Length: 410
Ligand code: ZN
Ligand code: ZN
Image (cartoon, rainbow, N blue to C red):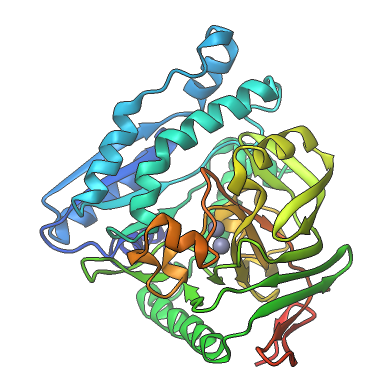
């Protein structure tokens, strides 16, 4: 049995070596909430031991975000500390490694004006765009992980005392991230090999469309010619192998921006901009959302979809078997990194250029012409469950099973 400290150490090592794939001589920029200080110190030490030339940390704090919504002038929400995002984009462009530790209270902004919440999110997305363009083009090696913070743990385990909420969430994170295995690095290599076998199979099939059937869902999405199925393991433009998310259970590709038809219903709530959007369904015609309904958070969802032209179209289709360790935990995480790796999902907005052959080399016009979507936003939402069937449609119209009752058929 490993102690908590040993597991935390393993988590730091795994993040630096398998996640970021940090190379000797590289610089590393870490963004992390203040609650992550103990983990960040281990990560920084591990990065220097791996040969980092310089590691810098940008701290984030939910309490500061909340204070702004509570006390800042109502007309001030277009203000933004642009130096942060400009630095991030510049460092990514020059090939510095990047690590984001994302952990927030999902209910942080639930009592705040949804208009201001949406405005602040949009301004943030606008400033983040140059950095996101760099990492979506795999300009450098980068990784996203999470860790328990009090508000998040309380949301998942509302009936437990606070210290138990935190230790329960740590335990699950260690399990799902394979940190509790005798050799976490070897467990990850095995897992990544399995994911690669699934992408190889679907890349060989090259289906022209996927058809989804589940309660509340009757939906077909077209896949562009030359789409590529990818796993969380990627290779940067500098040939560095890295894993974009820890945990990762998905394989994903690019939908055609003009080819989505039918109705798709959410299988889990979407936690967006501090608001929970629940029990929603989206109707698509010619790739575009024409109708939105939600039992909760409908106004925020509609605002999100109205962000720009591409926000009402899809940028990702991802497959995750229902038996994934995250889904087996039976928990709702209120955190996209975890929830997206529990279930089949789609993303509104921007498509990953790496999920189209030669996508990284195309101009914006060429990418759009090939079916690639562009938007300020990229927001994943979960549609998969134990009741979902997925079929692939071949170029001659044959229908082949991919998933039955949420599990792979191959
Ligand atoms: Zn995804
Ligand atoms: Zn996504």
